[in-house]
Length: 295
Image (cartoon, rainbow, N blue to C red):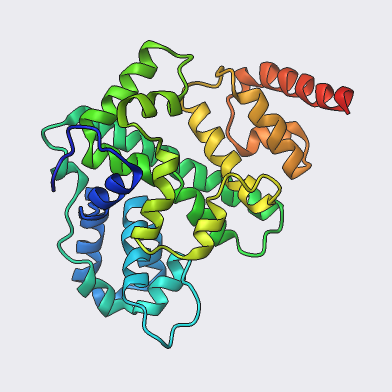
């Protein structure tokens, strides 16, 4: 794996560099598959799918592998992990994904970068859980598609922690020094681009399904499926800074408008600590009232 230590001139140059690097997985994922392979006669598709989906990096590897190896008889995109595993079959899956590189090995000499990556992975997993819960409440046509899109939303930042750890650490340090500094501003100062600008280039390079491109397009503000995903990602990111984060009341108000459920039900769904409830409910109520007044 080659590590990028300086900014590149364009989005395209970043996409080319990052897409040439192998995607490592979490060590726990590699170990879990090694354990499953030793008892392959008893392995089910569910065993494989649940292990894949617990790791956004492995999910990327699987979906990009499926797209790269699709044949002319496959006339639809494979968007969910379960369908990807069914498409491959159990034996071919283990043949394709044995002896994978791990992030722990890749970042062995950069423990801070590994910690940064694991934080993003944790946020992504939480966002996927939020998105899935809300998709169920909304009676979405396919909650698995929503789950995968939320899981992969922050893939560009994960890739930066793996392949450009010194640069993304500078972004992190800038924001830690200035809590008001927006991530996009810090990213542009260090990288010359933002991770959101990088997102769609990487999706195309990894040949991920077209539906994922649509679901990850945060500009589609009137699409409830897209809004479901972006609000889950926002909530996960902001809550990671503490339940007193100033952005959370606005998040809560938007989520309530999407789901049409009582605030108390939402706060239970997202596991907000009870000591944070009064401030969140009060601020969310003020935001909702302000929208009504302006209307």
